[in-house]
Length: 374
Image 1 (cartoon, one colour):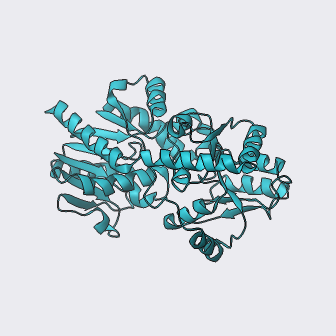
Image 2 (cartoon, one colour):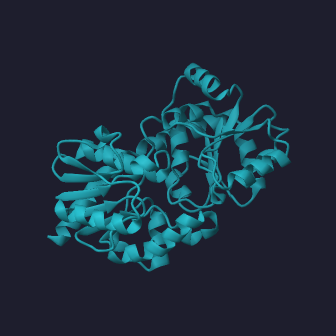
Image 3 (cartoon, rainbow, N blue to C red):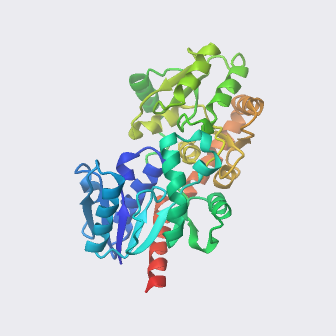
């Protein structure tokens, strides 16, 4: 088979769910598949060695293309290289509508349809205009949870036999680290020398940070000395979150870390007493598994995909009630026995997810689609 993959999200969105997925897709294809031929579309000359291999060719696509010329160029790349399957991991966005081979997309979730008010206007417009048209032309869809499969099929009345589920997994960098190493790095890099609760996942309204901060404020006196740390790129919703922290007088207790390299994230996880993820909607929800891979006890929402992914290894909360979030945070912080139990359960669960399994399943999907067309 000759398989084309739009790999640009691995570079553009590294650290996000879609970026991590695309990065590991390319990483493990290189390790696992020496039989098929691959062509990877890549945005520039940097990190080409990451995707290069004997059976993998790279096609650089200029970044400053408008949609019309990008579609023309990708279509020509597919034709000139005799591509038989073309896979777009970033929700299908950027796939040519003029179809010249079998198409596969990875559609991670349909948040812009379910919670449009939580999505930026630019991406919302692109997603809502394009995804319904994309679904009409693709041969199959990969998604990241049974919940997401059900959601896609119900919303679009889409054939379930054309949707395949491959779970995500924590990257290998997420693992327990020595306490001294973590303390040194946190102090040196982030000036953190206090116990803290950690949240990871960005500032979108669907991540529910407002209720998390209100819940933290409810129990501030009972957990005196334990801070709240929130890393992430400041987005359009950041000012509302920051304003609430100031209004509640929490500026000395809630810490925003504007930029953290992917390689330093394991230190932030390892240094936490507790990880809390009160998201309202997730297609998968990778940060709780990253925390669990670092043996950090975890609290998460009881909604959408999270119970499916986290099973019995987390304490679940109703994310719409800050009282419940506050109560469960206290429950875990006050019980060393419970924290230890959650740490062990979470660590065991995280080890069951692996990128090798995910990408092996993806290669099998390529083979299945190819066989149907042969």
